[in-house]
Image (cartoon, rainbow over all chains, first blue to last red; front, side, top):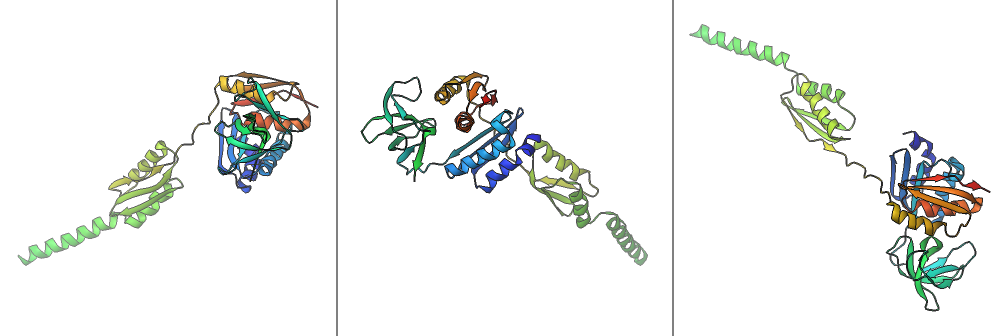
Amino acid sequence: MALQDKYKALTDAATAAGISDLAVREQDGVLYVDGTAADGATKDHLWEVYNQIDPNFASGDLVLNVNVSVDAAVTHAKVITQSSNLNIRKGPGTDQPIVGKAAHGEIITLVNRSNDQWWLVRTNDGEEGYCYAQYLEPQA
Amino acid sequence: MMKTTKFLMSAVIAATLFFGGCKPKDADIQTAVQAKEAAGITVSVTEGVVTLSGEAADETAKAEAEKIAKEAKGVKSVVNNVTVAAAAEPVTISDDAPLQKGVTDAIKDFPTVKAEVKDGTVTLTGEIKKASLITLMQHLNALKPKKIDNKLTVK
């Protein structure tokens, strides 16, 4: 219960932000907060609240797994790397050979999102392969 | 003959008064049982038969609710219609192999970060820029680890 008190501001913020399928569970000394956010700004806000409660995430007592919901109808995504190009790989994993690159800020076509971490994409040049999903922002 | 009838009648009246007076009324039973039951349990009583409804946290709490009702004075029987709340599903933790692969992918863009995966726990060492820390942690938290032990030096 103590962990739920410690992170109350976070779970309150998640509730206020309308996080869907919100689950707050404590297990073996770690609090797990899962859910789906309507957009990236909502997710980032929760991470700011988390950072305020536990500066630099050093306590190791929370796993915050809030992902941004993606409408099944979405077909394009923007490359949101910090500044560099995004590798497109032959298969889902950094151990896979690089088959192409997408530029920072480029909008590319989503082909398949069945893997949570690696999405199958196609660039405007017709290159097809897998990109790390965390660097892709679905376009409404 | 008359005497006998009169006697019987008065005996019946006396018996009715006697037993009726000492048997608790349904409303009284309801009040008494309801007061002892946990929150979320609703008690209703018809002719000494207590019906319990509502939701209990688990099977033990459901059985306890029935026990409380059975012990109350004037209760003939108990109908236990209490439902048990669905237990929260345990947290899904990734196996080490897929977790290790996910962690390798996640830290690839952070060359100053080292990560070790053991029994679902991701231990981070090395250093990272403050601006990159949230991004890295977002990537790692999405991999369903048991725990993230962050020993990074934040610059």
